[in-house]
Length: 236
Length: 236
Image 1 (cartoon, one colour):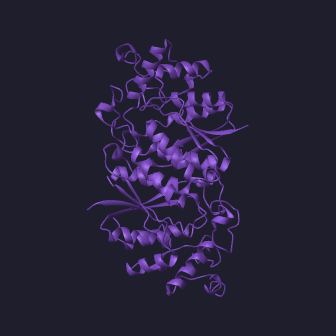
Image 2: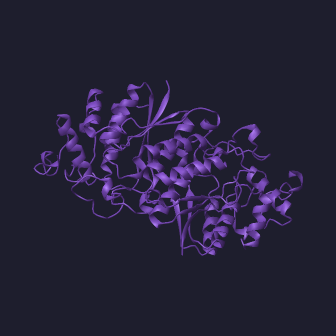
Image 3: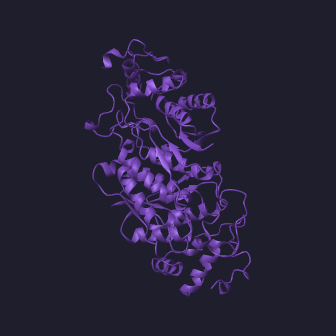
């Protein structure tokens, strides 16, 4: 079986990507990062999602992005509540400097050791249009660099960064995942969950998720801290 | 003062690069990795070199590349003794998969937080011609990707990966460093040092270093385990 490395955060997007890579027939090698994020509960979600997808291997890589700061997700800065990211308003404070570049670089190292030529990442240019490292031009440049960086490329073989969600809306992602049997009850999206893992329902990630389920005509199976505020109705 | 991030291993090359960046007038932010390398003594060298260069900050980043294996430098595979790397014989087993890509990605994150637009790395395409991630084409592709990855690039500012050693011989590097006051007694190059930090004198890195000092007409100030075998004469 051909191997693929899949970056898996435990969130809705990457869990869908894992199912899509499986559908493509790859043997799955899932990689998750403990990077000092406030929402470390997503690592438990990643474990559960990886187990259910019967991946060949799942590594949790420890890196400390708090050394640098620079983001609400890795510091004590308050996570903003309210509107989703919007490119017109600049780069959101939940952007973590060079995060996807770091994640892809570890995936590249593992892919090289495994002899895998495919790396899946659940970036999305629709909802995260304000994040530089979610844009198609960035991914294309990364892929070209990766070809030159590794043994695989030197030996003339392809190295592909696969981004099957890049131009999908959240509702489309949820529909694809549902059709592939993803159990979204196991996934975590919230940037600011309670210690028991309950989502806030108010941050950018929760609002995008709730809006997605609403537009897909499906019920979000996870629990929210403020169910009355977590209604998707006022998000549309 | 304009800031620059400098990747500093504690070896001869990166210590020279640090002095060159200082000479260019940058305020220096040195970054060193503890990545599961066998030759961890080089981290102490990096501390000493950074202290003497009066850097504004020096971070030691912990990452565990042993999770993947794939290299003699991060596993129990024996470090080869004898001839230096040679592209004609393929990629050496001391190559660490995607190492420079991972290192540069952390440097990119820090540069973004610091507002630095310059990242220095001591890659060399002469002695390490067998390493894919030491080639000029790789560095150019990385720089292009980095422009697209970050806030700096989005805001239309340059992001430069500076490789002042890329086409220099070891002797040229040593001459430049000596003229800039680098104390090579503080640097460590050996892939397989004794616990007390003494270099073996036989591995690829020691042989390249000894040959460089010999060609530069200078004496290498560090100690070797087998002084009789460490003579540069039979390397030429």
